[in-house]
Amino acid sequence: MSNDFSTPLNRKGTASLKWQRYEDQDVIPMWVADMDLPAPAAVQKALQQAVERGALGYGEVPQGLVEAFLDWCQQQYGWQPEAEWLVWLPGVVPGFNLAVEALTDSQDQLLIQTPVYPPIRVLGKLRDRQVQDVPLRAPVPGEKQWSLEVDTLAMQLQPKTRALLLCNPQNPTGRIYSRVELEEIARLAEDKNLLVISDEIWADLLLEEGAKHLPYPALSDAAAQHSVTLMAPSKTFNVAGLSCAVAIIPNPELRVPFRKAMRGLMPDMNYLGLLAAEAAWKEGHDWLQDLKQHLNSNLDLLETWLKDPAYPRRQLIGYCRPQSTFVAWLDVSPLELDNPYQTFLDAGVALSPGEAFGDDRYLRLNFGCPAAQLLEALQCMHQAIKA
Ligand SMILES: Cc1ncc(COP(=O)(O)O)c(C=O)c1O
Image 1: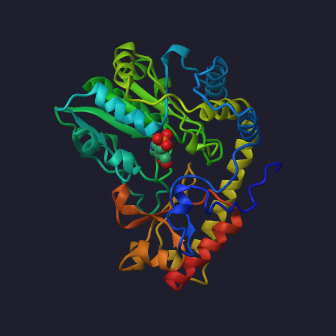
Image 2: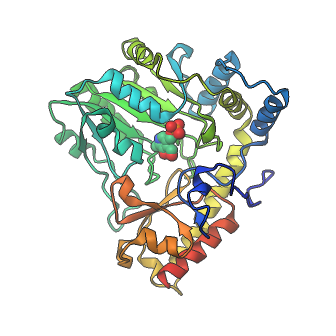
């Protein structure tokens, strides 16, 4: 592997959200979804050149960035949006908030599936819309993955259900929805006149052998016409601090009001984010292959730890191998700890509490880090559960 994913990064005192929260404690932060791994060399070079020039004024989306993104879509997903469908944004979270604000009205209901990324879970509250939650179904013995129960979802639709928030690949379960599931969603959306807001920020971090991302608007013309799809380089290339994302909105009846709602509220695109995104999408292919290999090997380490026959308590932890992402969703309820988050924190490892995602039986572990850091964190977890 030509890229280095093993050197520890000391991010203490660097204004990092992940590290600053526990700065005064002797704790390994394995929570928020950014990686303790360096961005691709091409991205670092583009940023270094900008910093050396010294002028860090306003940016504007360059043609090169648009082309790099379209080529990336072609190469990664075998599909290309049209350039005019793209609306550049400072983040995916502002993107789905804006879509709800601009494209639904206050009487409309939103449909979500928990467990889910906390800003999706609180979307209804923030935007003052009623929310229906049709939870994903956890795997039963013999099943390997969480299920998106489209039939249940269809039965629970209310007359006022107007928008469905899809997170694919799914955070925190790592599920990649199949073509069949997505087509069922698209048919339902078509029949019931629903808007689908598809958060695809994890689209490029598919860890399962042979998996291919299916962008929602690529399913059919109808799916393209009733959807807003959100993508970004931020998770894939570890540039989440540079605020760069893009909405794909093929239907002008959705795109025009979406753009209109942005006026005066959305900041200009981050100058460094534009440069980083272009470099990443142009030159990041090989780096991404190496990263996925590294993440799979970290997952193997985690599984070996969980299944170690010498430590039966570890085997109580419910886990299924995520098909994507760099987070693992762990059911720690069989350990019967009073406060699992605090127990692990006291033992020196900060995980994300499942409550924020809608299920307090779980903790989320971010394994996007050097192997040595993951092993150190697992050692702390070992102390916590006395396994
Ligand atoms: C599903 C999902 N959407 C959006 C985001 C963040 O998006 P942004 O930082 O572009 O607002 C994350 C970050 O973890 C995520 O997991």
